Length: 121
Image (tube, rainbow, N blue to C red; front, side, top):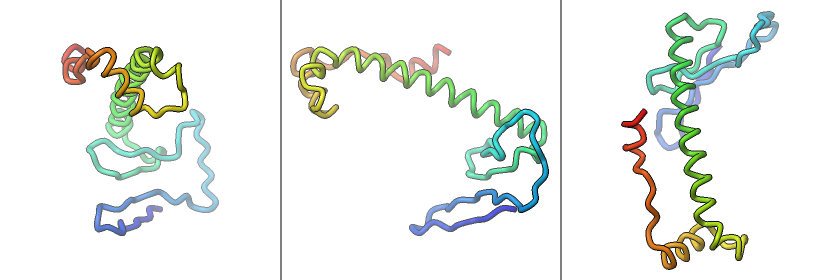
C-alpha cells in the first residue's frame, strides 16, 4: 500500500510504502523492502513487485551513487590531508576558518574539476 504526503511548502511531497499487516513474503536475498525507481521521481516500489527492467534500473542508480560517493570520499580525504598542517594546530576551528588560513598561506588549491573526472570515466 502506498501513502502520499503533500509538502507543506507546495513542493512535490513524498510517496512511501506502508507495509501491510500479515505480509508473509520472506526475501531469500534480504534486499531492502522497497527502492526508489529510476527516472528522477521520488516514486518507490516494493522490491517484490519490481520487474526486471526496474530491478536493473535500480542497479544503475546504486552504481552511479557508489561511484559518486567514492569520488566524494576521495575529495574529502584529499582536503583533509591538505588542511592537516593548518587544522591540526587547532582541531576546534571550523572548516571555513581552516580554509581561510590555508588559502592565505598556500593560495587556492589545485583540485581536478568535477566535470573533468566524469569525462575520464
